[in-house]
Picture (tube, rainbow, N blue to C red):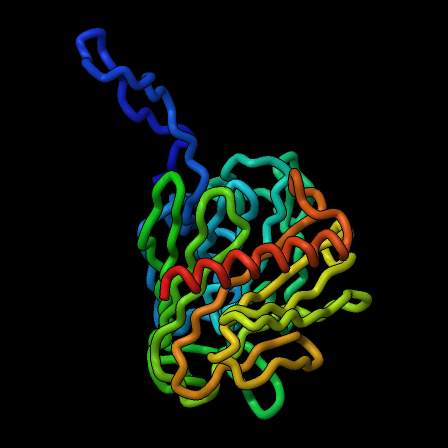
Length: 305
């Protein structure tokens, strides 16, 4: 069920009393994609993995579901990694509906490419669990379910459920939401876990790390530098509510935030690639974008209370 990039929104006739101009097309600037390779890569509304499903099962395009705006695209490994990867975009069109259907998305294309090496990390803001002083990937579950919650022209929400998570001892569910014109993914996690939850950013050598604390509810941790697979400059940031977090630190794989026990995490992450149109081009410009975004989040939070 591939979605068209432009949807006819209605035509006014001469008899129409309205003086508003006719809306000939509305650009689709956000989308969720769950590419079922058993159906030729068709974008489906939901999928549940079979018992025994493991990393490397080639049943889904690019190893899991994805979501995107006109700025950036993300994918989630739908297995025990639960890590987030990045598709850097060199143009604003939506691309996920054809990526991973036979193409090599690790090679530069007109639209862009997969730009992050995730390894054993949580990637670009994925969540896992704390084991001692390390944030690790969440690990296996009995099944994984991905489903489209919202998929409109300007907003997309993907829901992923780890059914019978071995690390947590329960089901863990998360919603990932992106809006048109934004790089931010809003993450809301639900479900009890036997271990503290954590979210992290992959550690690559020679990248700058910074933690930005504020007097408002939201703070941030980011890494910036020549860490894309091109290679060129890429910034990755997690925005988090300080009251929900017990620790901000690093291990060999991640710069991470550890959430307090019994907290249902709500955080946001974003990636900013230097080849994205209009993107910050150096560390100072990226840090400025992070600060501006933090100011907006804190002002918005004040207004909502």
